[in-house]
Length: 89
Image (cartoon, rainbow, N blue to C red; front, side, top):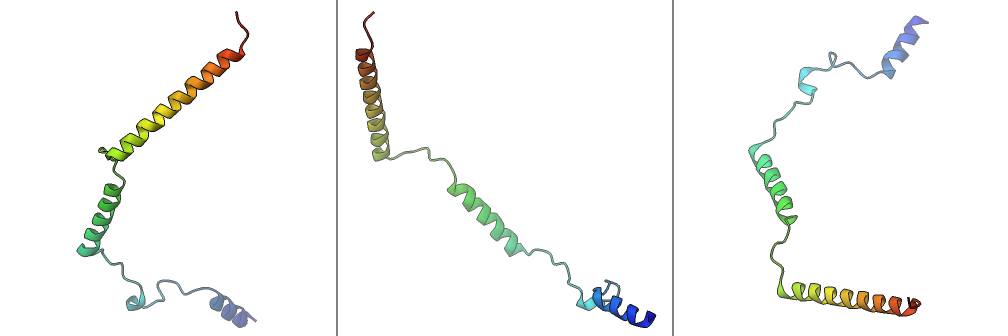
């Protein structure tokens, strides 16, 4: 009975690293120069693409100015209507 139990127990567990021949173990490889350069280039491109834009084009500045003017006009209209609805002092 001990023989059967040992055979089942051995079959259920993976072999220990000492039992694996040295050539079949995966070898830790160093990262090559080309891979390191590619990684640095990729990181630099991502950082460059996320940079803040300092110079806006003319259309963007005009759109922002128009938005500010329309917001100011809307606020003035709201304020005027609010003051007209309140009872006089």
